[in-house]
Length: 142
Image (cartoon, rainbow, N blue to C red; front, top):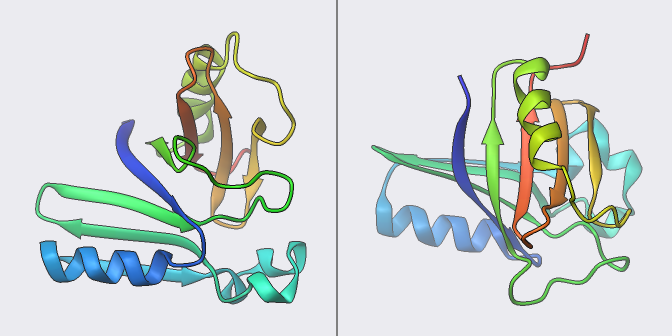
């Protein structure tokens, strides 16, 4: 079953921000550093301490975040530091919605990432034809 949650993008201070939100909202906080994943080989060492995935769950509150990884190709600015995060159990479930929402999306290679396998499941993202940023995560593609 698909569900959506806010997804925040920070510029190096994701752990600090999410820890602050946890002190305010309570709940369980998960922080995963880029350097603790197989993906670290794809990034320079100066980014290895950045958070690749953070999730705060407190009752009905559930949102995720990451540190900005796209620099220097794409810099953070007001308006592009928030996305809708669509999470599903299977690749096919997420791919169906990904393809529908991607109709007319900005095909800029800096912001459009086709849904594909990553170490944590399938991942993709784009900005739709209305300027809304979407990030998708599902199971591995067979």
